[in-house]
Image (tube, rainbow, N blue to C red; front, side, top):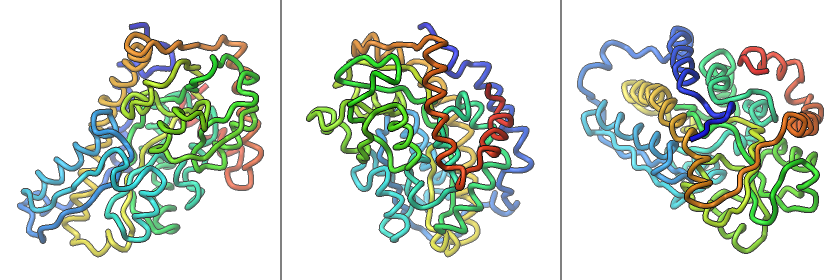
Length: 351
């Protein structure tokens, strides 16, 4: 395999883990000593809805979380995971948590934009360079701010924020994309985030909001010409079977966030609250390497197994991608000040 500079290297994984441990004093959930004794609370099953496939890193992380909860409670509390959008999809899982239809919902950070501005800075293009830089922020003060903000509005308890496949490429079925001008006239699937939609417009494309579970049929029927998921999402969902081209523009790096409705979480026995938070933190740390290893293999899978042609922009072309994309920052300065974005870049160690 020929790794690129934007793929998370093994040293970067080690650094991320060290940063996590170094920040544990400030961010880790403190579990009371009595939580180590056998679980004494009531038996129950918590339903977790995910739009992802169980065999990619994010799906593996949800499965790991379920196993931890089972072990920590001696089998009394089960987390039943519904994969592949079989219960609720990316955006709808958040709505389902809020209206009480599901216990735990998971979604990528852009899908939270209709409910909160807390993670809008993560939607901004080219704020962080890679997943290790973002993990540094998530495990520090910015991550604590997100958790606090979601509790205040819309009333969600964050159980975990997991690594989510690294930087996003642009994947297409109709033509090879090399520079922004190549997107002119194309319909591109966007998330629910207004920032994501603004980015596509800045690049000349027509953003088309579609739930992730509907992307396969949208690509197949040419409702959209392309989209920009994580590499592993395209493989796990089998959407890669329809793709012909990829442009490695690496324009945003995000996380998957698992949440419960705050009042429902607070109604649980304190012992179980601590267990869920502990299992979430351990899953985050476990998932760092799992996700990084998977991301490092994705481009070879795209090329060798599916024959997708991957284009890596030149330095001059990347400068053009970044200039147009960062013009979006100013459109949302009333919600995310540019000064904050620059500070986050510095804190993450990004260039």
